Length: 103
Image (cartoon, rainbow, N blue to C red; front, side, top):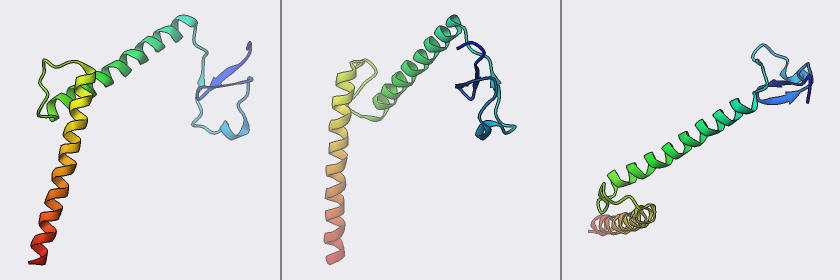
């Protein structure tokens, strides 16, 4: 892969294809193995933080969960139960609305 250049995260020879030859295309240098590893680690840490944030949001929204319940399985199970409850409650309210419209 010597003499190859990365354009928008794609590897080509020295010149980009004509479709990429506009002014918006930036010529990027190839990353070293250490830089790739550091990028991978940082990306994985962001992914894990996003997952943690999602679980924290579920804990704050689902009334049957508390901050001391950190088991992902319990969080997901109780979240599904709560969603089913909300859907059933919504259906009941829709039915009540239809009944009131008929009166």
